[in-house]
Image (cartoon, rainbow, N blue to C red; front, side, top):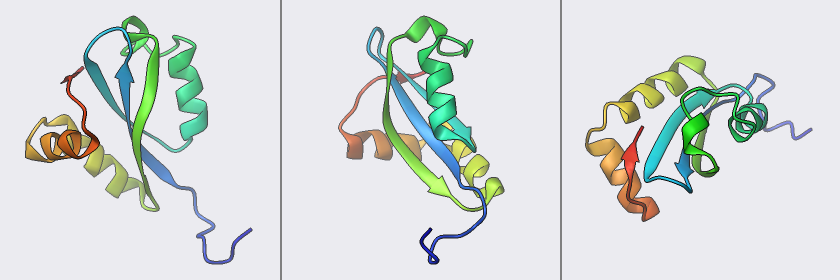
Length: 95
């Protein structure tokens, strides 16, 4: 293990894009790999009707509160989300 990396868990803010609709889903988790599998398997109510989905973006945080604050700010659909979507070159509604 790289000693420069923290031993604490990481928290992830992520965006999924539906390949079926124009929706974008924003979420936060401590286990990104497991959460993506849950989405892909249709186990997440919020994205079940959006399937298939693909991970288009994520950010990693060492502090849980910072990750959830960032998720909340993106879900407010303000200029921060608009700027991020422009930077990623994506269109679509958040859902």
